[in-house]
Length: 360
Image (cartoon, rainbow, N blue to C red; front, side):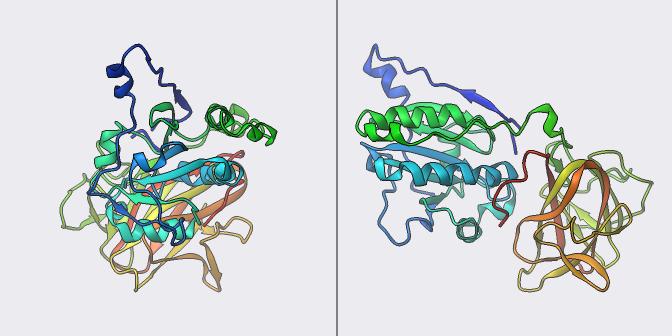
């Protein structure tokens, strides 16, 4: 997602060995006591909640965010590594630090870890203490820790998985040479120019100067609703509002039953982070693309169809799969909530090479 938005950057930690003082600077910081462990993956087994508990193992610390499409697309890679190497001493700990307010609630993190079927232990870094101790600034962000507790490799962003797997295999092979008989993953680059370059991530709230509202009326950043009127079709990556909405940093919230949020984008797929005030009372959101309901071959996995057209039932706070077009292209998508307290946070996108992943 997100650099806070950095993609495909690899940082190798060069570990000085001349002195104990230098070596200690590369030690992996411990998990902080103010974080909440959800441990959905360990399936009832007792797992260590400290770095020392993984001494003698090769540990991958995965900083992730449950609404982050870049994290979600790479889960298949991590699951594959875990299946191949866990028996030989490879472990993963997922550290979740939220981007939106919904991500600071441990219950939401637990639900997401179950939905994505992550088999490793998860810690909800609800105060951001672990995130700051590791100087993390992007999702996903992965730190590889050797059996002595030293950080030996860091990979930021989605992709560039080959260097990480190569280092995992190298560390494991010193005590488990049989890992050399396991085939490494084939090369993969889902960011090649031929895959298509989609619209940049679109923050709909007033996100540190990156808010995407195209209307001339400004963000209010309070609880008062603004009555918006469409001022024409938005340009790419911008959102044109009509109806009454409250506008804040975390997103925008519908204040009547006649709202419309219209976005111009170019991509193969589009996703949106959505929520409602009360998850037990879903809000129907009609979904139109280029002025008409989606066809069945265009709808994402969260899209439903009835006699009125294509729509979403928004309940749990998460990322929703909106559109999977047959081909990469430019489109105008419209979200029309049929109730108040529907919240739209952000949009993200996928290119032609980013379609093969678990959509849960």
